[in-house]
Amino acid sequence: MQVLGDGTRLEIGGGLKEGEPVVVKGAFQLKSAFLAKELESEHGHD
Image (cartoon, rainbow, N blue to C red):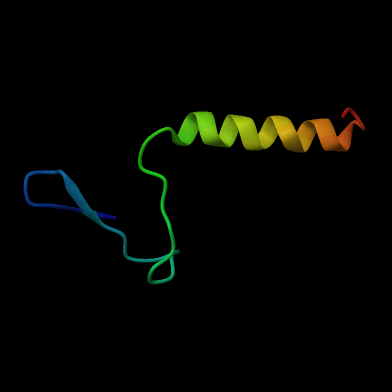
């Protein structure tokens, strides 16, 4: 990852495909919600 200009833009050099969506705000909440759903399904709770 390389910071460009005044730091408001980043260049990501690998790990993503062109046009693939990226979360830039709320990533912690998104991941938390995803993991909570995953844990529920593993333990059989609906």
